Image (cartoon, rainbow, N blue to C red; front, top):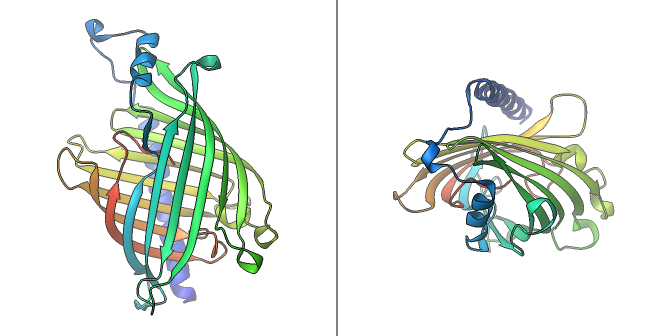
Length: 289
């Protein structure tokens, strides 16, 4: 067991090194894509176009995946199904100060022990919040957005199984090219549950990552690193690879890899290294994290 954990942590460091190297290369080489002069429009037109889009939609990735632990023989106890539903509702157009807009979001994640007798749902995580976002516009192109949000996450249980925390988060997404987005998110917390006062040691203090879309929009790659509390290079790694099932659909066949702590709130202080496969439903453009 210790050997499998060591191998998984070694794999995490290699993956992190690859993501960091890719990010550095991209930051040096990439530039905002130019548009022909006759196609250029002003900032107000871009904001009006954004405001005219549907107010309701997907927020984070929505998925339904199943799999097992890496490095161990699959059993009913180390194999499961994991799924997430995530939506957002824009409350205003970009009419608030500094052309910001307000929105509500809600994500729900479930760990489902489908291979055990009676198929118990092991843990539900509820994550509602309120956000304030501003589009970043440069050279008459939307090149990203910055978001300030208040969010709560808990598993809705009590006594020794109660897990919850509250965050004020500052997040940023930068669209380096039409096919590459880098993202980051930092939070300060108020931890109200006595059962998870050390949650920052496992669920982290900030996260960063990168997302690629292939030129034909059939493949998507996402890598996220969540830095756990402490000065050493410790963190949780999430890798997703998706292949679009049909050209004009937002449904993908998904390979999902999680390595680290904090995969769900009930077991936030337990290490998991699991590989799962299943269905991914993505927002039309890049996802939020």
